[in-house]
Every structure is written in C-alpha cells, then in structure tokens.
Amino acid sequence: MPTEITTVIQNNQIDKLSESISELRDELNSALGKLASLQTIANNLSKLSEGEITTTNGTPTGALQEYIVSTIQDNFNGSKNDIWLQPSSSNDADIPKFITKQERLRLGSKTRFISFLNFKGGVGKTALSSNLTAAFASGNFDSTVKVDNPLRVLAVDLDFQGSLSDRCARPYELIDAIEKKVLSALLFFHPNQLGFSVDDLCIPFIKCPNARLIPTNDYLDAFDNKIFNYQAFKISETRFSYRPWFHREEFLKKNDLVIFDCPPRKTASTICALLASDFVFIPTAPETLDNSSVIRTVKWLIEFKNKLNAPFQIGGVIFNRTYSEKKLSEEEIIFKTKIERGIAQTFKDNPLRSVDPAPRILDSFIPKRTGKNSIIGNSKDALPGAYRQNQFFTRLATEILQRIYL
Image 1: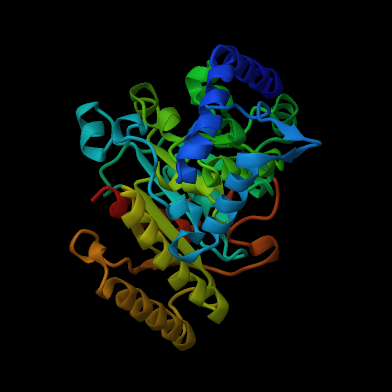
Image 2: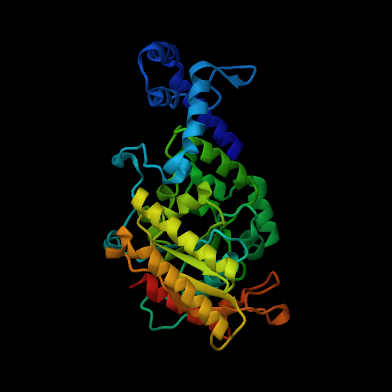
C-alpha cells in the first residue's frame, strides 16, 4: 500500500510541476549569471520533485552539482554540522500546530506525549517503554494521581530494530502489518495525503486491552535516511511531521497517553517525536559510560529546545538495571550525585533555567534481574509492568504520572 501511495503522491507532484518546468529551467539559467547566493538556487530546486532533476549518467551537473557540494560542506562546518538544529525555513504559519496542554484541557482532553531517549544504546529504553505502557494501560499506578484509571495508551516504535514491536505484538498481527507496510514509517506522510488516521496504523498491544502499538521494522531505516536528505538539502521541512497525526482533536479525545520509544540516535523519527512531545525521560544504568551519555543527551536536548522552540520539558532521568532493589547502593548514589551535578552545571548558564527546572533523577528505579525472576519480562506474554505485584513499575508509573500531570 505505501508503494502505491508514494506513486500517487509523486504523480500528483509531477502533474502540478509539469506546466512550470520549462519556465523554472529558464529562471535557473538566468539566476546562474546574476545571483551570488546558492540558497536562491536551492529554493528553485526545492520545487522539483525527487526524480525530476536532470543528471548526466546519474551524476548531477552544473548548478545542481555545485549546490550539492556546497550544502554538504556547509553541513559539516561550524555550528551548522547538525542539520536538526538549523532554524526552520518554513513560515510559522506553515509549521503544523502543537496543541498545548492548556488547549487540550479546553477540548476536554488530558492527553500527554512522552519520549524515552538516550543517545547510548542498551540502557533499557524499550524495556521501560513496554512495561510502562502495560502499567499505565492496566492501572498499575497509585490512585492518588487524578487521571483516568486505567489509561488509554499508545506506544510508538521508532527504532528500526523493532524490539518494542517484537516484544509487544502478537506474531501474526505484526507479520500482517509488515506485509502491508502499515508501520511507523508512514508517520512521515501527512495523514490527509494517505487518507489515514492513527487508528489505521495501530495493532493490539499484547494482553493489554487498553493499549495499542504502532509497530516498525527496518523499513523505517530507509525512510529515516531519505528524510535526513530532504532536511539537509532543504527540499522540505520534515521535523514537524508527527504533529498532524497526533495533535488533532479527534485523536486527543480517544487517547490519554502516547509513548515514543526512540532509538539511541538522532534520526528523523526521533526529531519528529521530540517536536510532538510534552516530556522527555532519559533512562540510564548506574554505570560510567551510561552516565556520561546522560549529560551529552541533556546538553543536546537543551540546544534543540532553544533552536527549534520545542515545547517539551526534560521530565527526568530514570535509573534502570540497578543492582540494588530496596535502596541504591553507595556506588549507585555516587553515580546519581555525579549526574545531578553534571545536569545542574549544564543548566547553570542556560536560557532554559528561568523556564524549565533542571531535571532530576527520579526516586523510583528498576532493579536488574534475569531469568524467571526478570522484572522486565522475557517471554512473549503479558508484561510484568501490568501487575500490581511488580511494585517497582507501580512506583515508577506513579512518579511519572505525578510529574507529567503537575
């Protein structure tokens, strides 16, 4: 289905451009001799759809070749080496709307969007995302939190490895979604182009009636790379692609909580999730390499928030896979102190300090266990986070809800 949809979209773009292609080429030829700015050429080229650019034996020529070389060099120089931090070329009116928490309340919705992110892999993002989805959707949190119990939860798998999908979907339903290519990669398209809603992308979450899943597979990797190039060469503004899907009234009225399980990389999917999120939580293990990645992640999130005016807050850091169960060990407390000092220093001279509080490490933590006593679960069955007997997730789910509904 996505291949057919893509073909339709490209054909529509070609039809719209066919009448102006000759005029545009004349304009480009004239501009080459008169204009010093390659950005003007880039703006003209951005009107050409993919596959409509003239090449010689597959190699771009002339002004296009100069533009590509210049853009690549520009993206590797100085402060511009991170394309995701560059200011948007779109007018504010053209950027999809982020519906604020206050606006949602007026619509009768308390929906929250949270992302789990750490730029280091293996810290337990997916284990937390899956079990917390089960906990929220099963009502495994303290009743003092003034929200519906249980919550209607949507988990979105944004790592092409598909660990969340493999863990939380029934095999035949996941296989069916993959065969039809109805996956999280479609979130890069505008829902009006596809004639889809979020409901069309969802499959059931295993043994959890109040939860749903938007799955993925390595199909997403190809889209992430393509969207990166769209952004790098200013073909289109892609960073706000998720908002038209999730920040719409009909979606907000049917969903209480959305969890984006982000990969340990700055992919297009990660960027789109952040710009649709209210809060970002950073899981980490109390180990040296993991801890240094927390500070790196926080620094980048602050810069991203400043450059893009992103609406999210850093909700906190979550200790995962601790060796202690009742309370943190002395060594783990030392790690905790180092992280908190590093975060405090990062926020000290930052413009965010007057708006957002420096994130702290949450009091709740998830111990490390293996085998049949695993806290995060090993088998393709209901996740431990769904059960009250697992007090670790009860406490963590409660603390997160208290944080995001302040």
